[in-house]
Image 1: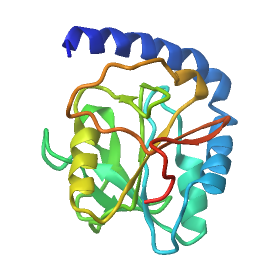
Image 2: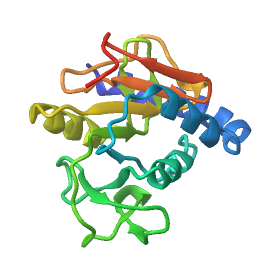
Image 3: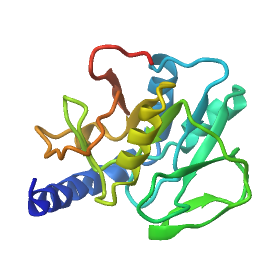
Length: 196
């Protein structure tokens, strides 16, 4: 796959996401949380890893707040080592965050480590086959590949605006597909089985 093809797809996807963000930034998080909680199969002991939204990303903060209030363990990713899988740190709404690489916000390095059962994934675009267009660093692809290789089961749930759906996204052999996508309009499973 040509890097230029993905670069062009990223530019188009970023423009599309930027265009809808302002219209959905207030009500989008609540709608996304509603659809996630009504559709995604959750187990009582699950740990759900989210992210702190950046720029025009769909914001999962309302979802994480509701999960935490309901008693679920929550986590956020941390880039512990460049070009390696993400580390996940236990986190609750209100816990302190520090600046990470690439302008992200992440838990303190001494926060407890955890292994997520569900990873809420940011993205630029998704398609009807569960392909995800990320930012090009490969962090989530490496992370999902490592978690899936453990054989314990993990769900990758993309969180996005419905306008971020694209057709036939470019895909490399190392790209990891989503199991679900949740938007302000609903939740959709990919690959047949909605469970783990």
